[in-house]
Image (cartoon, rainbow over all chains, first blue to last red; front, top):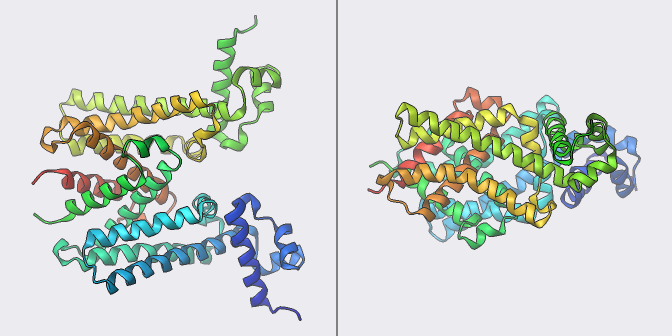
Length: 203
Length: 203
């Protein structure tokens, strides 16, 4: 029984995700996908445009998963009655770190990917995905009435925290000496979140 | 007249730097270097080991240049009598941003390079280069007696600031929408440095 277009696209996307998580962007080959999906190379291009589009679509799924993981963490903390802002931010940072460590190859491929290689409307959808992730952090800051931040400031602060944690994670990968000196990834994230939040508090 | 080994190595390194700044790691080809240096491909391998070693050596020169730029900024501020910690940190961040923007391709290639691909002793030298850069920031924090930080805390804080600025710069590259919303690279760096430093101050 032939699969319909939506099912085939779905299948191609799943294969693309697996290939990216195993071998990064160089592993994303039309021939390999076609063979696994049991369709022709031409069909791949008909379905997804080109490989850049496909990589972008796979990245969006990865971002969606990260967003779901972040929301799941927020939900769990709420159930436990955790309202402390620092604890909430650290839990989100821990979720991010675990996610990156669970998808090391695919995440590196995502970071090296430029959304500018996608069609214009897809680029918009891509950036919206990222903004949704910032919103999770921004809402934690906005919830803390003692911080007295408006939406614009909460969003800018969320962006800074996100990029900073990202920088710490990427810079510290594989540097074992740091770990020994008490300057490991988690020591740095904890210091960042704690100090930044303290600096946000009105005196 | 034949060049001696040191001169030839120097020449090979300069060619490697130029190729990396133009085309990134894929442009670093033994054949292209040999042609430009007027030596055989075999001589390249005799001189520098392999292309990973050569990339690492070129990166170390890039890190040295960044270090020199940072020290030049510190010197200029000293001459002007600037002692404010926030101003000093922002000036260093601005130096870093300008440096990355002046070497976009070579810097991206440096970030994608894993020092683990170099020989063990070269790896040590590589990490020492990075530590020298952190020291520039750590000394600014240590100079500020009001912060009351010991050396270990100054170094950890310097590492956090460095990685955070790095994360902001890499995450925001090419996102013009952010610039329009007042969430551009510099808005983020300013908020990070100002808030983090405020959070470090004893109350």
